[in-house]
Image (cartoon, rainbow, N blue to C red; front, side, top):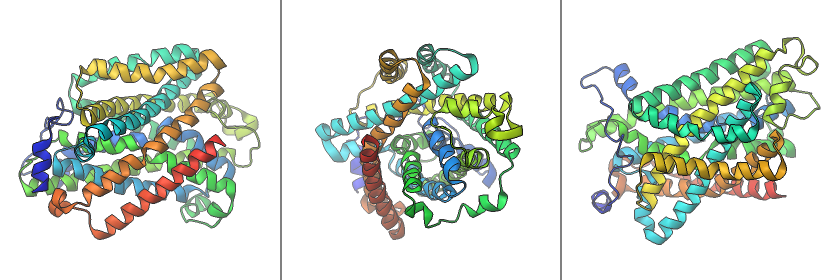
Length: 447
């Protein structure tokens, strides 16, 4: 059987060995207890769908086009649910993460090239989190951006401390930070009093999304920045933390079922948060002709009566910055974990966790520090760098989606768990569409 050959050939051992098969699953328990035991990986994955890189695009979409682009967020989220369920299934059924499976099919030389591409994408993601955290520290405590970037190195030690308490603790902290972001933006949207009828109408796709060039550009930006390649590697690995019976068909089927439910629930929360960002932009800034191109401009606008009216207050601005800081911290955790996964999976290189995570973070802050030194310690400088990090993510996306689709559609590898025909067709349509979309975004960005 091809699956057995895959597993036999895997010299790299378990994916994320320090957490693999460490979280117990209650036996003979009811649905809700089982779901609770499997809940967690979805939260770490959902973080990538609401990171600081998406914020300006979503709020700008609402400010310029009202509720029109809510339909785009909905479509993006449905795509994410499908891809993440495929990723989780690959990890559970084969016992390999996506990086390990790709390396076995590609060989040593091509595996090294794919590792470089994926590492660039992870570093690009980490740069976005560094910038988000540094901007938040600057807005909250007036810490210079350069110093804020350096402070983010300490995030690595925070993660190492958390890891000592077990993977469930990391999942719980991530879920708490997500809840913080959700509550903050829900409060701000309620205060903003959006038009409910227009808001729900925005979830229905309209021709203007395609016919208006500006709306189309923002729509493509939302879709292209939503599906992150590193999430596919991450999810295929961390789902293996649960102690399901690897040799029992019924146990594997149950693990796939509950992991998919967890993923869909957490991605639904990410969907709500992204919708709240766009709704906030539509209800507070629609019709505003000034610039809202940076996180700092959005922060200041929330406390400006001339822009948002009577509800403007320093509290709204502070809450916005707190949510930004929470988002940056969350994404840092998932980014460092993914870096370890792809290094061990693609080039089978192991090193102490602290060293791997420190290297990832130091490499990520170097471009930010260089930009600040060369072009100045201003938010516009670092946030323009944030835009270009999306280019690396765009380049890496096809190299993760296409192998994922091939592997999960392979009956010899997946057995009865292979993709159904409608999933195969839909996955290939998504893979081709996102590849074309991201090429277009790259060209447009440089133009």
